[in-house]
Image 1 (cartoon, helix red, strand yellow):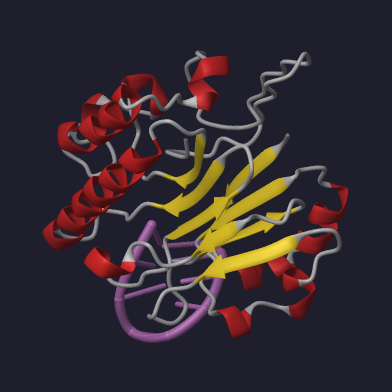
Image 2 (cartoon, rainbow, N blue to C red):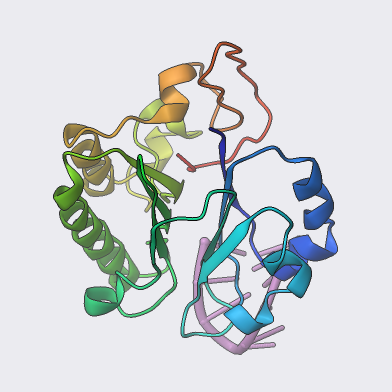
Length: 220
DNA sequence: CGTAATACG
């Protein structure tokens, strides 16, 4: 199975830049995107109706902000697009898709850099999701997305200069420690332990390619 | 500076 994760920074922008052309040659079973910046009705029809895939999205109440979407070849047994609402309001940051053999989460974790309030929100978001995930401890969970946190020094440029900057603060990194303690594996670092490599293609099968392509900063 | 609405990353 191949799962792709991509922070697109505007689904309508990448649509203009031939997203559907890229998708046509993409062999992924599941494609997850973050920062769609569009309500469900704002997604181009071509994007919602890509051949052979089921489409799901979660959008923020605030127009043109945040949002995640998933395309899946396999139809999930269950989809939830609002699990963060109770505690955190609706910023369209989490999509849960349940399949027979595993549960997929596509998550756009908040950026905490704008203010103390947003850092607090980010920490609460992590806490809420980590707690929510505990119910699946006897199941297979794949959580991809934009974590907005670098776990270790190797995971960002200039770690020393960024120790007090949101994205690499000790208390943020601790949340990723918690995820690892509860059994999650950083799949990129599992296969690629090279410095100056922040993302790209991971192939977990016999053809284990490493690549410097992508360079998706802070994306785990 | 890019995206999409005038804020956010």
